[in-house]
Amino acid sequence: MIVIKLGGSLAESGVLVACLNAIERKYADGVVIVPGGGAFADQVRLAQQHWRFDDGVAHAMALLAMQQMALLFKGLKPAFSIAGSIAGIQAQSARQKTVIWSPDIAELDKAGIQASWDITSDSLAAWLAAMLSADELILVKSAVIDADLDIDKLAEQGIVDKAFCGFIAQAPFTVKIINHRSFQCLNTTNRSRAFW
Image 1: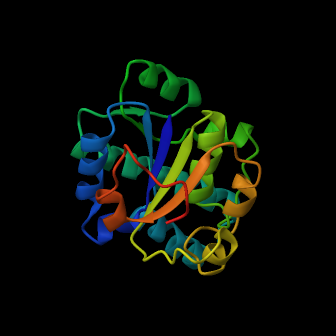
Image 2 (image 1 turned 90 degrees about the vertical axis):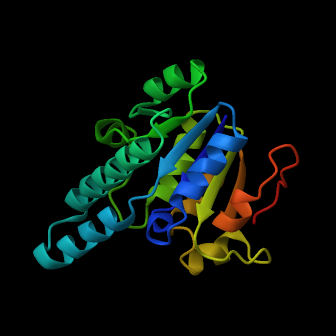
Image 3 (image 1 turned 90 degrees about the horizontal axis):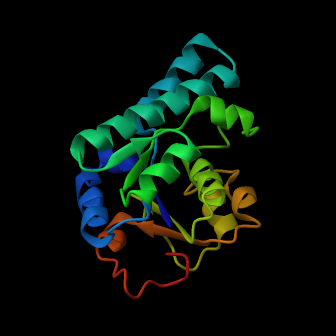
């Protein structure tokens, strides 16, 4: 199984459909797509600054932003399925469906996921990959990725969130961080095991 996180900024940069098309074209099954919160999450940040509500409320609202993006992805790719829970994802994957994750807030709360802006859809994708015993996690970004930088440096630059390193510290799966242009050209029969 492969977990592919599509950054919310891909929608703003106009390449979201191309990335979804690449998934549809190159991966037959066993793929779970994790949506970033995109502009919906940006609105949560602005609302928190204005209204001063706590991070617990902001966390729940940011998860709702991911759910909105999941619905957008589903609207763009009706053949993909959508699931909120680990069990739901596993059931859809067993039917050889490409699954879009619409995160279940209660399930994440039960798992003890901290309510913090240090944890974004990057870290949640890593958590999900671990829960699903995935073979590989791919983060697709609109930013240019410097192949010479290690994961800690990417976190310092804000390419991945601050908590991501902790979430993958003991990861049994391969992690790849890749620019959307490289992702669209990725050959699934000969994938590099390095960070991109």
